Length: 390
Ligand SMILES: NC(=O)c1ccc[n+]([C@@H]2O[C@H](COP(=O)([O-])OP(=O)(O)OC[C@H]3O[C@@H](n4cnc5c(N)ncnc54)[C@H](O)[C@@H]3O)[C@@H](O)[C@H]2O)c1
Image 1 (spheres, rainbow, N blue to C red):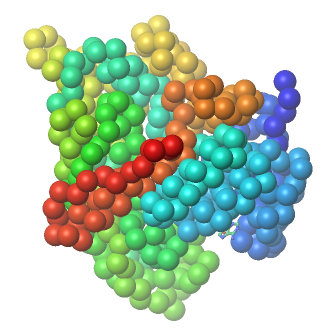
Image 2 (cartoon, rainbow, N blue to C red):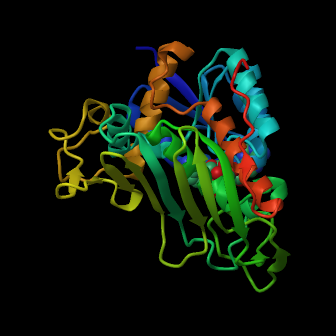
């Protein structure tokens, strides 16, 4: 099989996991990384054991050995990097959120379709085997019609006011913080598992920590390092939010997100309640799926190849009792992405689990509706989204 060359722009926190995942595939060469400067790219290339380093992402995109561009830059750079890669006819795997507003998301979705290349957004929780198990059970009618879809995505890494990075800067992270950063994951997962679409939202946003202390422009996303010369910055974006949801089948829903909630590390929970049964998946106990009944005992389905459905088996790699993890699910997404690219990246051959720029654009529209709702005084707002070709 032909080997593919991968180049990554934005070698920070999540970049390491993109590189690890594609290395596990066995038929992808990590050719180069591009950073914010030559010095930074050189340093990261050494750290990630990549041979080539570019100080300007345009040079990486022009490298003929690179077929697939991974975009893991801060949110405000997703648009220029991705459009440049698409203009060069390269396949693009972008991290979420796809864009910082719906107009940019739509432009990227349209450009990707016009380019005729593969386009993927890393809504990586879809890659968990028991997420696919739940999705299959709902799709096959085992849950019955869904009436309620709810949960949360709670973290605590921003509980320290000394955490300040591009994520809290509207010019670089976008107008939203927690909703765009992790609410986007939750909503994508809710729609993916339920097979439903969110049609309107009512949101209440809060900034629990309105003043943060910046260590300067180079502060990395999860760093609290820095001296006494930190600068106070007024934060405008939300670090806590609760949202009511209405789905296209009439189902109701709700979720909360927060990144300042002590003790919650990566606490993503999704529950769907059907007329026949309920399903609950917790990211922090991702090898179990809770199945709720009203006329018999509830069950816990273990991620075991002999117990899971065909849909889940495809993403299950270890025997029962052998825990699979965040990185394995991330790799599952990359395996489908590169399988799709090997097959030509055409819409008709896309694996059904794989999230594309269509999903990325839709996600930005969902968060935009939540921001509009909050600004209008927490009233119901419709999701304004234009499907491809509409
Ligand atoms: N899928 C997930 O679960 C997940 C997890 C974390 C982050 N993310 C997303 O990944 C993206 C990056 O987040 P992160 O946490 O890794 O941030 P980060 O700050 O750790 O990394 C960003 C990197 O981009 C580099 N960069 C800045 N300007 C650049 C330029 N002009 N050219 C090339 N590189 C440049 C920075 O130097 C840094 O190394 C964000 O969009 C974020 O939302 C997704």
